[in-house]
Length: 247
Ligand SMILES: Nc1ncnc2c1ncn2[C@@H]1O[C@H](COP(=O)(O)OP(=O)(O)OP(=O)(O)O)[C@@H](O)[C@H]1O
Image 1 (cartoon, rainbow, N blue to C red):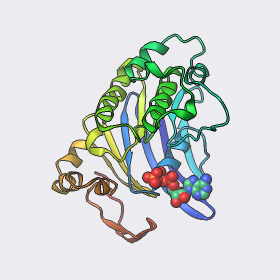
Image 2: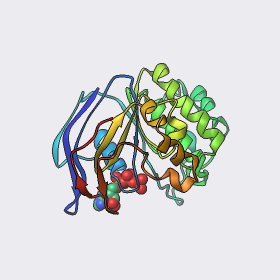
Image 3: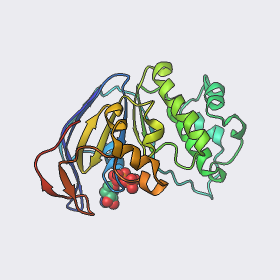
Image 4: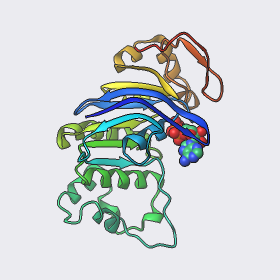
């Protein structure tokens, strides 16, 4: 569905993404993980077509319908915009609106102002908008930030079921690998470059993974454990390298 070949991106002369290669298959669910500043949001923006790479190629059908949920959307408090109006932009005929809102548990907030929503409600509205576009590819950048834990489990299951409902592929950024494990087909660990890419089972069996995700929430932000054959400094630069390992 989408293939990246040697994709590079820099901002202000600083390398953010270095020779990224991967392919997302049709109806595949792929989760992107990595530490803060690793370039995850930058990569999903490139994939969603919102930014252009400096080098390398991104092959996708120009007609591909993408539903994108950004990491953050700042709503202007002085601009009145009701949830129902906001969603009308994606679904003017309101064909599936009620059932999508019901699945997301936000049927009751249609008349609320966008800027008055709680963090978790806003994320659900953004997800609803992306779904209502009937995408062939859903690109979700930390879609469940601010959603309570019980809601996260339900919504990750829903995201997984969208693959069948919408017949779409899903690429998402998440720090909650322990929650998405059961729902994702593949995991990419990113830290400027692709550190490793594999099936979640190979990650979940790893004793260090269990140790990592059994610890506090702060530790969840750490990169998941794998056979890392190189080290990074605090900026994510590789300081010792003997080739990249792919799981
Ligand atoms: N438009 C921009 N201009 C300049 N620098 C940018 C821009 N967008 C991102 N960056 C920088 O690129 C780096 C990677 O940012 P990105 O948001 O892709 O990381 P991330 O992996 O999604 O991080 P997090 O987990 O914290 O959300 C950061 O250091 C950020 O400051």
